[in-house]
Length: 403
Ligand code: NAD
Ligand code: ZN
Image 1 (cartoon, protein in one colour):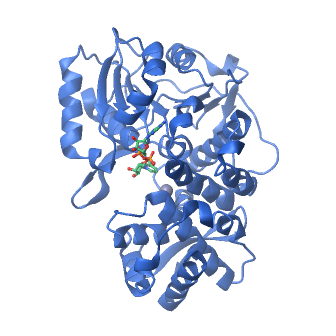
Image 2 (cartoon, rainbow, N blue to C red; image 1 turned 180 degrees about the vertical axis):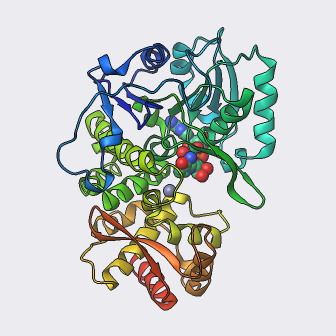
């Protein structure tokens, strides 16, 4: 099931995105590509010319020359046997594929226990201990194979080991493919809060092998689909239809998956390329998230997962958008209501608490709550909202339509 390769170069040639569905070939290509000049490669696509707000229609496809050196500080080719940091569930379900791509006599492999608890200082420390038991060199490649938890942990390990090892992401969840492996945010959690220890650190390449998704549980699919639908609302309305189609296992063809992943990667990398540190446009990626984070916090991160909270959060944000006079619809979300099957009953009487939590969200400046809304499908706007009763109404509406 070999598909056409796609190679996208970000703003300064920092990261290559390779969609190829053969991990073995991907890794060979990624390693070799560090010496390639993408100006000679017709498959190179420059994502920096990509305007995330206007992603419908045809693309400008342009080869670009990578800048000298890499942001990870490690110049040149990866060298030595890779350190592999792999999610334990992925290892047990895909051991053969992983062993074939990275023959185990050559790699040094650390298995990360599944779950958010692995994004901890203790686990980071274990990764450090593990890495130093091998023959670590200045350019030893570090390869993360797993979802966002493994990617964030391994990314931060790569950023900190020897002041920066060449990092490669092999995302194995839809969420990691369309979101967490893109954009250079790495990190772990502290008792003070989620993702409060970390670094901006770009991978050399992100390798997409969609065969990993064959074992992804349905609930994790929906988590990734929420982020795809988010891109639909903030950039490319086609993703509303195509993202929703992925909720149905029978529709997950390689063609559709490749299309959705590539569009999502382009949108996120396009936004990040122009605003790597979250001052302006990167805020668009928070559509549905200010509401969603509040719901996750109220739930104490127990029963509702991130994608489910963002799903509800987008419905609330669309309600506020409509109240401000914009013609937008939550129908593309509501048609997936049975698939998400969220139990929001414990929270229906807590709309006041949710708004209080929103006011404390770290992304708010001053006293207003800065919300990402949409003025039309594909057009995000950032608006300060001071009318807290409107936010409570938005929650009430969301609970009404989802319970
Ligand atoms: P995850 O990494 O916890 O994976 C979800 C579950 O799926 C886990 O149980 C895992 O073991 C399992 N799994 C992974 N791949 C599988 C496969 N192919 N087959 C079967 N099971 C598989 O969760 P996630 O949703 O991928 O990522 C969530 C994390 O990502 C959060 O910690 C979040 O903070 C982070 N995140 C980071 C960014 C960023 O920009 N760095 C963006 C969004 C989210
Ligand atoms: Zn998210």
